[in-house]
Image (tube, rainbow, N blue to C red):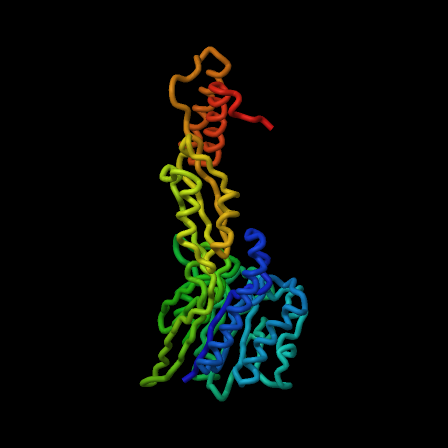
Amino acid sequence: MVRLLHTADVHLGARHHDLGEVASSLRERQFSSFARAIDVAIEREADVFLICGDLFDSNAQPRRSVERAAGELHRLAERGVRSVLIPGTHDCYDAASIYRAFDLPAMARQKRDSDLVTVLTSTQPDVFFADLDLLVRGFVSDTKTSAQSPLQGHDAKADGRGRFKVGMIHGSLRVEGKVEADDVLFTAQEVAASGLDYLALGHWHSFRQDRAGQTTWAYSGAPEAVAVDQDGAGRVLLVTLEVKDERTIVAVEPIAVGRTRFQREDVDVAALDSQDALVRSLAARADADVVLDLRLLGVLPEALDLKTDEVEQQLKPSFFGLRIRNAAVAPLPQGVPPPPDTIAGVFTRGLQTSITAAEVAGAADVAAEQREALHLLRVLLDDPKRVTLV
């Protein structure tokens, strides 16, 4: 039996420019989830720790950050647990690669000539652990993108080394109608023909597992979510390979290590009585581990006085992060329009025509702007003192 701990897409050092002051806290959470993945590998007595690309968010990382990551790998090396890494698309193996600039195995302070920490590259594509009867193959390009599939023509059975055969790829499985292009692309047919027992994958930040032929494949997902649509992140995978009746049986167990949860929600402003009602509704769901991305939709009621920046400030202590985007549109004017032979009437008809055309064309942003313009025009006509032009 061989136990693998599979992770990917840690993205250490990610800047998270869209999260403002929460960004530094999320970077620390990402490192903490990586450290917890190391803990799981030790606690569950894993034989090999696999990192399937994008350990780092970019190749431009300070030495202290690389040393910190190497320190975690050293915790495994001290206990005789091997680590095998491949570059990804963010920390790709080009001329400026972080894996060329820094000797990660040496920084992890492993014993000289040992195989405790291995970075697989285009020049060192595999590593064989004789005591485990395990061959690990990394399919790595010297560039971020690859014109051909990394699995093209590969048959692990042709290699006589290893009873257990494991592959590592950072790229996308082609899915008809959903994923048909990416930096690195391969097909289920190629996975089935690979001769691998297990294919450890990175690049998709949410967990997914399946089989192609006799090969079990899985995306571990990011150990800590890094975007609002990654509801399947926050896990690592404990993978067991065992021979039963001359067949290799692969079992995959997801294990939670992440804390942060990203939630995206839409709220119809027509259902809001006041700004205070929105604040009270959100405060009742306070969660220090949630980044809430709230989008306001619908037609703004005339009586609703809403300032999203005030709501964000009031609820700041209630969530790990909160972002409110007001995509609601102004109401169309009610009542009798201005006469068509007046300047106001000409503008009104022109804006109404533009709104209809934009809505038919599916240009929601344009339609919203035109609605706002028409609303302001009507307010100016009815009561110019209500509008301040800056």
